[in-house]
Length: 385
Image (cartoon, rainbow, N blue to C red):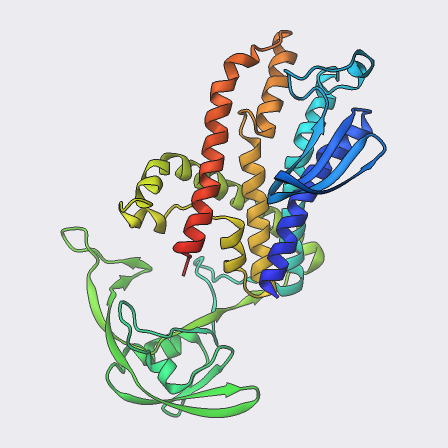
């Protein structure tokens, strides 16, 4: 279901964005001659009134053509009063920012919906995530190895709930963590509840090296490297605890999540900009480690990442926020660039020399297209694992 939700969500994101521009323009009497989903060759279209609606071959975006937004466009004198450029500043602002606002509204609604239906991750007083004894995922192989984990060999399954270890009750994740780490190399019996049935799982815990942690901090040696220790290892990830704030309680929580995601999106965009040369080099045999911290992702990759409905809707919210932040950048040909030009005209009373902006607009266009193409390449040939 996740991939289907992601595909539908991405299509709706584009339609809603362009619909925001279209509705605002129509509301102010501006003339919109085209409203298309996609770019490139036309696949299908129909004309209703003065607007042609349709679909084009490349489904990575869309556009609404409002006369007068292109400063070099020649307009019939009879239509001049209905152009974008003839509108007052506040109307221009609403038209160009309507698309950006649509992303933020959709993101807030998605975050609110997910938190209301599925709840939010619970945190302890120290800010750490509450971890339950219900298993979220089972690791197939040992860290840095192709050998199967004890959990995989024992037949452990996601959604199992650990109730005992070697006959002793397990009531918290810390109970199990202490048991596993202190029994490296030993044969153990893990008792789980699976759909109401008690099942004993037999395993031999392996020994791995883990960083030494004290008071929540990784201990470092004199060279700044983590101090390692030996510990038993089973190979499972716990399900986080959940809080259920309800429809009204979720409103401030969603706003907080939204604000945090905006900051993360700004940082991610900056990392993409400064890391762009390294990402390009990684495609031609450079250092692939850059892709572990910053990499472009295309709709193909987003569909690959789609999982359960909850996580997919959360991912869609984050995508909407990032796209909204990107479009707010005050550079042509982005929506923020149109707003910046309108603001310049309002403040100075002068029309900017758009010819001087074209080289920068070309750079921005090439940058965005390059990120898209690299994202498609990486998602096909080096997908996120």
